[in-house]
Length: 311
Image 1 (cartoon, rainbow, N blue to C red):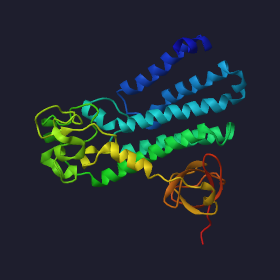
Image 2: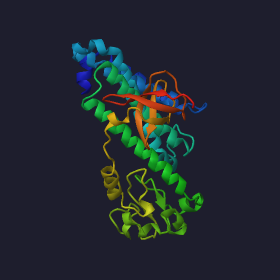
Image 3: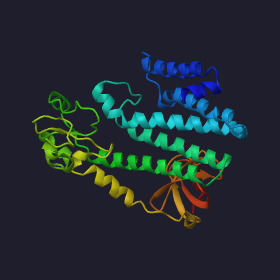
Image 4: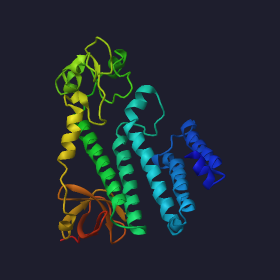
């Protein structure tokens, strides 16, 4: 793949080196930690560049040059924001760099990633076509991130403060791939059960699902982050059950329905209608978060809304 990309641009290696160096510089800076917007920029620029190269190998795409750059940039930004969110706990335990300053920032990073993909969807819809497999793939990915966000918020409401020093002293949080570290001494964090009694740790530390590999009653479980196996749930069954309960909605039936903007629409973002969020676009430009709106139109990617007048 690298050889092919080099054939499209003889400066390919230099450009990629510049993007990687810019990213590394952000992580190594001793000054103020960059914001998420700043941190995603080198990767966004790299993806925009690579997507633009497609116009070289497929000349028919030349008219979509700016569209492809924008789509690439948004995808690159979404990937970095998503990785920052899902890797936060692991990075904290290992002392690795993460642009997020605290666990509470995870929700904002997940929302940031999903908003980037909303922009991808609308950009593709405007520049290429509103339906088709590409639009569906973007919409499915948005729904997957939205589920993660809901799960994270749900788990945070149930989160029980634990004596961090005692947990680390046990070595319980020192295992890769574990986003939920529970121990019997703090069984409230495991829905009232010691971790080794949870369904993910079927037979305690001897279980193949348990990563600790010791004889202790403490168990690090491989999880489908951010679902916590130590919440006495079987992650694989939880994920299948969750996906099977996602009902398909005839979006044409949403026309005329009221909703609420869940992000700022500028003009694109998220709107909740009848308890479900949809990628949305405002017909009036900027609409602040939390405003009442009405669905005026649907297309192959999302819904179009306008702000409802008070009264």
